[in-house]
Length: 75
Image 1 (cartoon, rainbow, N blue to C red):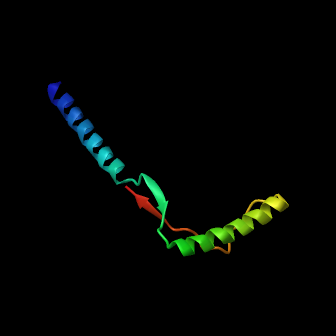
Image 2 (cartoon, rainbow, N blue to C red):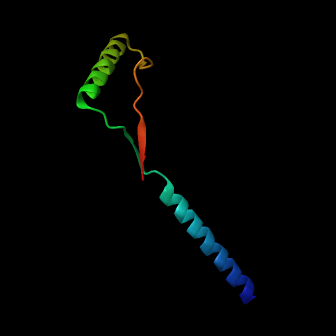
Image 3 (cartoon, one colour):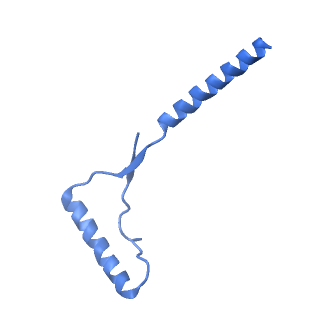
């Protein structure tokens, strides 16, 4: 009886250690890639023009032709 309970406890400990290592490897947040202020300003200005047109037309914005911001994981 004791032998089987020890084995189960050891299995639980191994499972907890594996889950703990998996959790530490997951990214906590995604942040945009750093760009120069001038590039970010031009990008934001183009997005504002599209957003203003969509507010007037009451349609959802479509930023398809603009460069997508690359997100970098932070752990």
